[in-house]
Image (tube, rainbow, N blue to C red; front, side, top):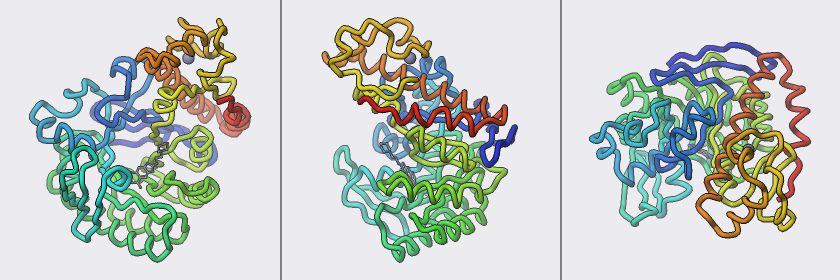
Amino acid sequence: MQFKILKKDGFARNAIIETKRGIINTPVFMPVGTNGTVKAMTPEEIREIGYEIILSNTYHLYLRPGHEIIKKLGGIHKFINWHGPILTDSGGFQIYSLASLRKITPQGVEFRSHIDGSLHFITPEKAIEIQLALGSDIMMVLDECVPYPAEKEYVKKSLKLTEDWAKRCKDYFEKHRNDQALFGIIQGGIYEELRQKAMEGIVKIDFDGYALGGLSVGEPKEDMYRVIKNIAHLMPEEKPRYLMGVGDLMDVLHAVEHGIDMFDCVIPTRNARNGTLFTSQGRISIKRSEFKEDNSPLDPDCDCYTCRNYTKAFLRHLYMCREILSMRLNTIHNLYFYCRFFEKMREAIAEGRFQDFKKQWIPVLEKNFS
Ligand SMILES: O=c1nc[nH]c2cc3[nH]c(NCCN4CCCCC4)nc3cc12
Ligand SMILES: [Zn+2]
C-alpha cells in the first residue's frame, strides 16, 4: 500500500492511497457496509456516486455468514460484488457496543453474539486471521475501545493491553502477510498525555496507517475536538490518519483541518432511512408537513438521481408510507451529498483555500430544520 501526499494547506492535506484494488483520494469518506452491503444501495450505485472504498465489519461477517464461508466462496469482494478497496474494522468496537456478556482478558475478549447468544472468544491473532480470510484491503488491529466516561487509571491500564494486542496482531500479520495493509489504533480516552504515550507505543510497532480510536463514543464534542487538535498532526505524517466512526460534517471539517485523512460513519445512511436529509440549505426532515405539497426537488443545488427526478412531496409520501423506495432515494441523496462535500473539500485544499471552504460551510451545516 502506497501513501502519497499531493498538497498541503496548513495541516490539511490531499493524498492518494494506492491499493491493489484501486486508488483512494483523501480526505476520504467511507460508507459503512456492515453486513457487506451499504444499506439499500447496490455496489454499482455506490461506485456511480463516486465512492472509492467502503467499510465492512469483521464482527458481523464472522458471526454471519462466517469468514470461512466467505473465504471458500472467493473472498469478500466477490461475495459482495464490490471490487474496489474494502476496509474492515476488527470487531473490538462492535463487541463493546453490540455483544453481551463481554469479558476482556489479557489473552483476548469473550462475548456472546448479539444474534443468537452463542459464546465466542476472539484473540488478536484470530481477529487478523478473520480479516485475512475475508481478504479486506485494509485491516484494523484488535483493540479495546475504551468507553466514555472512563477513569484515567482504567484508560492507562487499557493502553497496555491495547498495545500488547497491537504487537500480537502485527506479529501474526507478518507471519501470514499478503498484500493487505494493517492499521494500528491509538486509544487514550480524552487524556492528551495518555494519547501521546499510546501513540508512541503504537507507532514503534510500525503499521501501514494509524487510527484514532476511542472517540465519538459519547464524549463531549469539545473533548473530542481537543484530542484531535493536540494529537492528529503528531501522528506519522507519511502514513494515512483515520478517525474511526466520524462523522458529522462539522466534525470532519475540524478533523481535516488538523490532518486527518480517512473517515467512516453511519450518519448519511442511517439518517437517510430516518428521513433526515442533508442539503445545501441545511439539514431537513422530509416528514415535515410543510413538504406535503412541495413540488420542488429536495435540493436545488444537487444533481443526484433523487433530486433530478422526484419532489419533496413524493419523498415525504414515500417516507410516510414507509416504502422501501424512500430508503433508497434518501440514501442515494445523502451519500451523494457526502461524496460531493469531500470532493469540494479536496478541491479547496488543492487550491489552498481550505479555511474559506470551512467558513463557507459552517453556517450551512449548523442549519437544522429536522
Ligand atoms: O476505538 C475504536 N476501535 C475500533 N473501532 C472503532 C469504531 C468506532 N466508531 C465510533 N463511533 C461511531 C459513532 N457513531 C456515530 C453515529 C451514530 C452511530 C455511532 N467510535 C469508534 C471507535 C473505535
Ligand atoms: Zn440530491
